[in-house]
Image 1: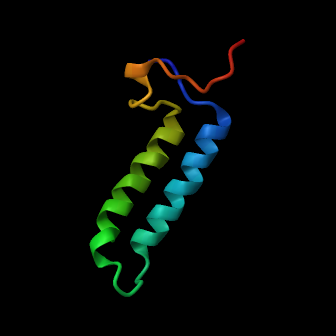
Image 2: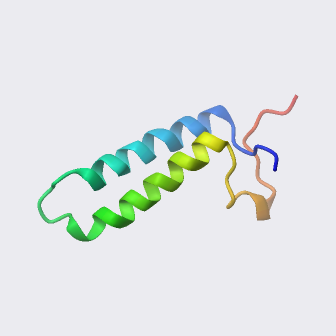
Length: 68
């Protein structure tokens, strides 16, 4: 599988994913129902940033990598 994510895309995903995981691990009052979904989405964003592949991009042929 070829990489289909560029550097900016990966950084944005990593930051947003870390923020969602932080939110999921916090003890904010009234946020109980959103903690698990936020953690799962954050985890998926971190994984896609690490491996530089987005499965949602593949069916549409989208790539944010710079071409050489």
